[in-house]
Image (tube, rainbow, N blue to C red):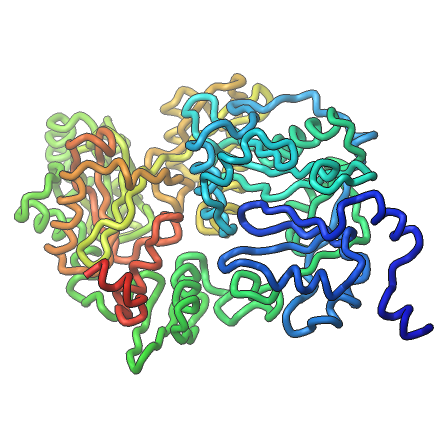
Length: 576
C-alpha cells in the first residue's frame, strides 16, 4: 500500500478535478509549449512530455504542485525553475484611471506586428517565434496577443501574451495566465509594461476569468515590484524546465563572464554557443581571451588583436581620420583646429558655417563634444570644456540631419542604426529635471548601466535653448530634446535601419573601413534619411558596441571574423 501511494500521489480532490478537464494538456505558444502540470496525474508522463521539446524551443511545465516527485523521475534532464508564481484576483482587480500617454494598447493585427514582436523578443534575449505562427493565431481566443503602438511613429514598443485556461484545457477554475511581457528597451515612453499588464487583466476580467497568473524570476526585483503594485500575490506553484542550452544559466549558475558588461558579454555568449573557450582576463575592463582549434585571440569588447595600433591611432585622432576620409572620397565637413584665444579665427569659422560642433581631438563616448553652437561665447566655453578631455580641440561645420552609426565587420556592412538624442515628454506634473532623471533611470536599466543622461552644463544649455529651465513643468505631450548628441552613453537611443540603408552610405562606410585598414569599426555619419544619398562623415570608432544593434547578427559576424572555422560548413560556403 505504501509503495502504491508513492507511485500515485494524486488526491481525491485532484482526481475529481482531472475528470472535468482535458488530461495531459499542452499548448503550443511558438517559442515552446506550455505544459499544464495540474492536468497530469502521472509524473513520468509529464517528464516524457518535456522530453518532446523541439530544438531551439523552451517548453515550460507550469502548476507543478509536487516538483520533487517529477524531479525524481528524471533528475539529470529536468530542473526546478528559480521563478516565483504570482496571481492577480480578477474579481477584486480595479482598472487604473490614467490612460497611456503617447501610445495605445491593441491586439496584434498584422504580419508586420508579428515581425515587430519578434524583434522585441530577440532584443530582450527571448526565444523568437516564427511570424506566421503569430498570424495563424490572430483570431485565437486561447492565445491572446497584445501590442503597444507609438501614436506618432506607429512603432510597436511592447507586447504581452495571455492564455485563456478555460479554452486551453476546459479549466473549471476559469483561470488565465500572462506570458512574454516585453518592452522595447529604447522606448522613451514610461509605464508600457504596466499598461500591457493592465489591458490583459481587463480583457480576462471581461471574459469572466477568476484570476491571472504569471511566472517571474526570483531576482527580477523591478518586475516583482510592478506586479505587487498591481495587486499580484505569491501562490505556491512551481515550474519545471528541461536542461537545455537556452536554460543553461538557470541550472548551472552564473558563469565567470557574468561580470562583463553587455558589450563584452554578447560576444562571449556567441563564442560559448559555438564551443569556443572563454577566459576572462579583466571583467571590469571588458578584456577576455577566446580560444578555438589552436588559435587564441584577446579582445576588449569588439576590439581584438586583429586591429592594429595604427588603425586605433587613426580612429583616436579625429583630425587625421578626417584627412584620410577626404583623400579617399568620403564626404567630410569643414574643420579647423580650435583655440579660444584666437577669436578672429573662431568668428570667421562661425560666420562661414553658421553652426559648429566642438570636439576633443582624442576621446570617446561623446565626452567633451558640444553640438549646435551658434555664438562666440558658447564657442569659447565649449573649447575650454573639450580641452579637459584632450589638449587638442577641433571645430567642425555642423551638418544638419540625423545621426547614423554603421557597423562594418570584415569589409561588410552588418548593421546600421539611427542614433536619436534623448528627448523628454511632458505630463503636466513633473519638472524638466524630474523627467530627465526618470528617462535616465529607464535608459540605465535598459542598457545595464551603460547609458544615462548627465545633469551637467551641456544638458542645461540644451534645455535653455529649448526655451525652458530645469525647474519648469512641461505641458502634457510637450517634447523637449535635452542633449544634442545622440551618443548612447549620454542617453541616446538607437533605431535599426539596416534594411533601409542607401547604397552610397554603405559604400562610404566600407571605403572608410578599408582606408583605416580596420576589421571592425563603427562609422558615424550625419544624414537626411537612411534611404537617401546625402551623408557626411563624422568619425570612426574602433570599439563599437555590438550589443546596441541587436537583433542584427553583429556578434555572429565578429566571431566569424575571429574564428572562420567555427562557422558551420554550409554557412561558411554561403558566405565565401
